Length: 124
Image (cartoon, rainbow, N blue to C red):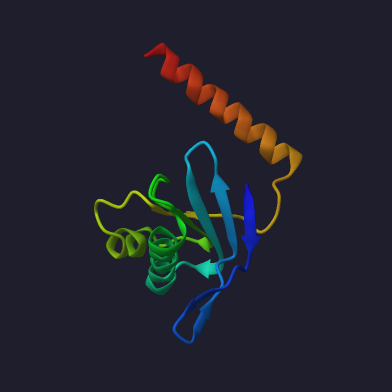
């Protein structure tokens, strides 16, 4: 369920605006998505952690599950993500996205490759 875009979070006299906020009815939790152009930084991850903490402490009800944070960037530095998040992290995820849709041929190729991988896995 879409909750909002650029929903303001105010901490003392500072305002912050997560890009997208959803509520997942099946998981019973809020999902916060932030979009970044360029490499994800430790500051971006820290900001997402702040959003998740805020929603867990101020917005969610006791019977709801912990908030999930998703940080999408055009470039992902896996090492920065690894060392910025705690080892037992289960709530914040970082991934890359593309600024354009794939062509029809690229989609066909990706589907064919996935089919091959599934067939290989079934053989073992």
